[in-house]
Image (cartoon, rainbow, N blue to C red; front, side):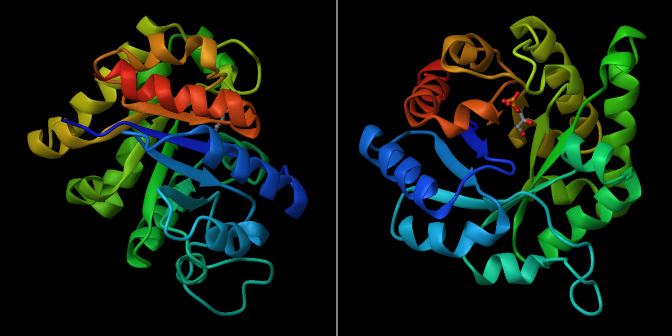
Length: 253
Ligand code: 13P
């Protein structure tokens, strides 16, 4: 049985004061959740939030990392540094990084490897753009993105990773994939990993991301191959986020 996961990607939002309010509200509103909960604040806040979450049931994730481990890489943050300040997870290959910062499949694969080398659990994002979706190229795009990582990191590495399917057209648009659409792509991803290693494919946790909110979470997470969500906008509202976490738990009951 795969344990459900909900990760909140705060993107470039927050301040020390707002973060404290949000974390406190999440902690107050949620009982011991049966699902795994991860918050991914901007890198500069990891240390402080990590301390606020210390001895708590919420895990800490970063939003990206440098593919290199140290050296003359001005502005970059290494996996070891993220680990050092308390992160246990890191998002890799988010579509905003791919589109806005030109991270290609090869770089994403290097970041995936760097994350694991630093002892972090990568949350690998895959997903097609609106144009690719309209052309019917979803499976082709997702396969290419997965295969790039498989080629470099090998299938065994997916035993220490989470994969998030985030259709770009659903991110921040209020237009989520339907549960059937999400299920179909998740089943495709699982089958592609399982073709190489059945046990790893079966155990791999697959998150859906793209306009997840409390109102649609239960239906999405109720799909057999949807093991939780990667949540953007709604993770900035404590009550929404807590309800989404509850939906991940009940959806799998
Ligand atoms: P939204 O939930 O705001 O659509 O963002 C999804 C996302 O990009 C999470 O990584």
